[in-house]
Length: 514
Image (cartoon, rainbow, N blue to C red; front, side):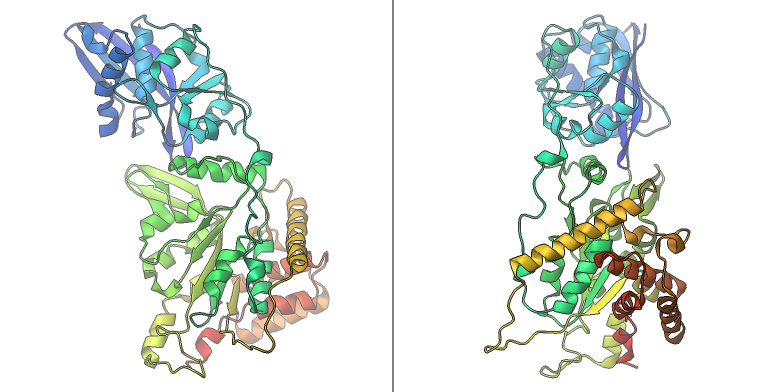
């Protein structure tokens, strides 16, 4: 009689139920796995045989029986070694060496030859699936239990080896469920205070404060040494801690690619800083079996692209859909998956390849054609999707009147204003699956961004005079909404529109070459 064991496969960042069906018939010994397994799954038969033998039980090759394993659904490609444990338990169940209620347990884990369990990817997504299906418990390698313990509605059992799993299922040596992890016990995301130590660049700091409050994309444009990189890295200091939903969402992405650290549930927002030689697949995601890329790993956090024009053109253009939709669709021969990618883009670039164009104290050695070619790597449609573009000039050192760093009390006030602005946004968008002003779309922008008459006239005049797109028109509205939130204003007036317009002067990047 065949038996059924529940397991899971990771597709993108989500888990899908896999039924491991085990059946055997008399005959010459054979061990066959069907259901579109990859090489790692096919090789599991040797690992399983050694693990069961070293656990002191009868291995599949100890007697003449034809053993067949079906991984259903059969049309979904199976990859990775996480099916080792459910296949082994299914074999022991089918041969009468183990008895338990298999309909209430989900199992996943890689087996070593000695029977010990090794960590797998996607344990958090599997725990979410098990909870959704109403299962009683999930059994995982002990290395994965911390991330799975985020989910409150299911018992998470961690085992060191297959013998412990057998003892727990037989109820001879029950393993206690792992203690649940809460966001309150996670590390504080604001351990450092780099932002307050940066001298000067007050306009760039204000722009970054607005960007952090509304989760707006920002491009910093200026000569080398002006502080663009350190400003970008310090911006993560300004951002509020993640909510419990955001933290779980982010942890699931990191779990799917095996990047969960010792603290699986953290309020700290991710900060990704890929090198400019990174490929489009690494940035966007993909591969034979679609996996999360840098834009998904930066979900709910910051993606910092330093030296923006040095990135390949196809890499930059691939950011268009994620910047607009907050998701990315990856299609491959093996299937299609939608990955979350709601990140805050911080980009930095020089005015020319040598970096000295427009500098009165340093000569630029770049021919005009090279300068234009360098800047044109940033296409108009991509630039149109970046909410804020600011110039970051090189500061001079005045030995008599040094610019003092941001005082601690002022820094605390800036953070408090940003936190309050985020709280206002969360209240405003409650029940709409929207967290920040940058996520407002054209369907509800008039509902949330209500302008006074003078503010509306100012915005229309600016858009018409500068020939700006309707996308830019909406982005200026959303920027002004964030500025108003920082000032605790329910209405958007002309001062808020004026400041938002001052952060969108991207045509200056090219007008000096005309």
